[in-house]
Image (tube, rainbow, N blue to C red; front, side, top):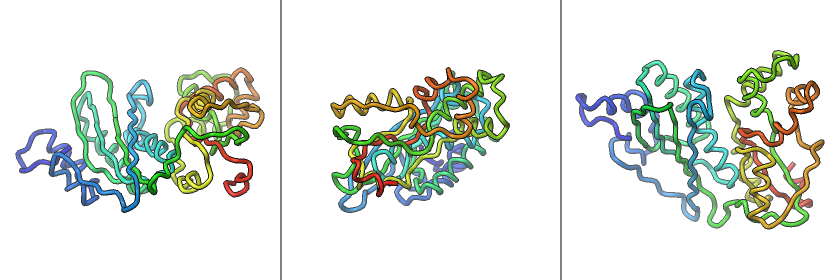
Length: 290
């Protein structure tokens, strides 16, 4: 992603200069005036790289607000960095547009810029393209950890506790709500709003990165559901796990939904998009982590 070299640049140049160059405040971004960025990790640190994409009709609804689409695209990558114990350092953006809508782009840039500042993860560069398919946003995020301290999926040990942050299943229920599949449950408006927001806007747990590095034996973020992601962590760690479903933390909204229809429990356990942290923890470290 590069800004125009002169006022008569291409349409892409003008688009980048108007909406994205103002977000590129990191010195290494070179104001998006070059074909690449320059970034040096702090001394004694490793560079951690992750990439996730979101596609209209798959990961978000085409009618979702533009600023929310931008925030979700960045936050799902921030969640991956948090699970590795990494501090955000910057990101690259690839944006595929079926059409150029100035109002949509202004909202997208606003949401992206606000989250980039909130999470201290500046835009470093990227690309914009036209697409004949659905709109997509692909982000490559960079983080840093002290040398050799990245928290891996592999590392859980027999006797470890299985822990999660936040509550589980809200996003999966929020998706079903958006698909009009929770009609008749009698959920209060506050519960419906909570579930819808949890699907629309994940809350990455980057504040826990340092604690994970110090205390957890293995970790990952929950993008594909508690049941499936725990199986992945166990497989690479060569362990197995038992989960008491009664101990899975649920929000008041999720409890109300399951109370009205207990068949929703599998959706809660297997549904994706929670973007909470899943980690293994030695029992003696429980009090410190809490």
